[in-house]
Length: 84
Image 1 (cartoon, rainbow, N blue to C red):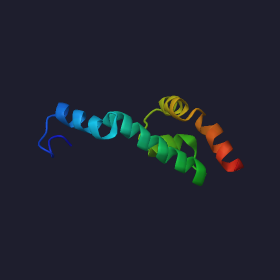
Image 2: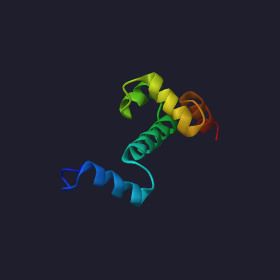
Image 3: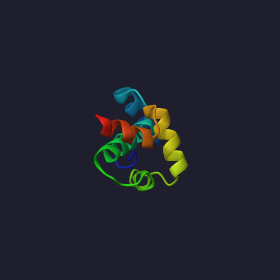
Image 4: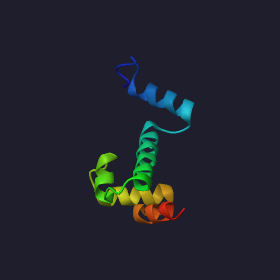
């Protein structure tokens, strides 16, 4: 991305942080988790497939990141979202 914008990596990261208040990496994680939440609520896909579809190569890492960002495991999130 930096190359396409004719910026150094460092400049791109700095400007990204100035605009959004966090790093591109954190934004990517946020987007992946939001997509996973949508798939958990609206599909019956397995959690392993959802992890894969949202860019996680490891189910364990997906579960850990989801728990850290959402406060529930993916399974618990699905149960709670379907109870509403």
